[in-house]
Length: 160
Image (tube, rainbow, N blue to C red; front, side, top):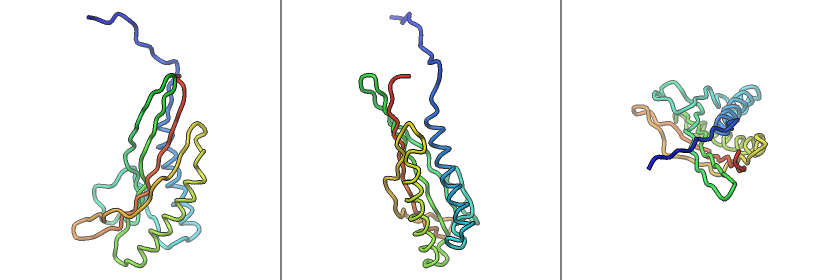
């Protein structure tokens, strides 16, 4: 059997994924600028990456963004999309006490930054829902501390 209808093309498209990605980048960049200009912890963050760089040598301390996943559900005339991702901090473990200070500063300040930005995108809820140490990353024999903040952005709306 062949379908004879016409596919519907919306008159406008939403950019939820692009918007939340831009927000997470803006949060990471704002944190880096704030930390550097206010001397939060010396050498806290030097770079920001869209993804974990393939070569870590000479890159830490740094922040990277994880991939974004989407979970979409439909209920009557409502579509709910839950985007999830992470912002991660990595740092060379050359001085564990110094590294621990930087990781803790990153965790504390990012928690407040995420809370302050919960409704920055006015049509959804943006939240940090988990944070913690992950197994260390390695570049050759060099271990890197690896702290990951997981976030979620939930958008609910009618069919547009």
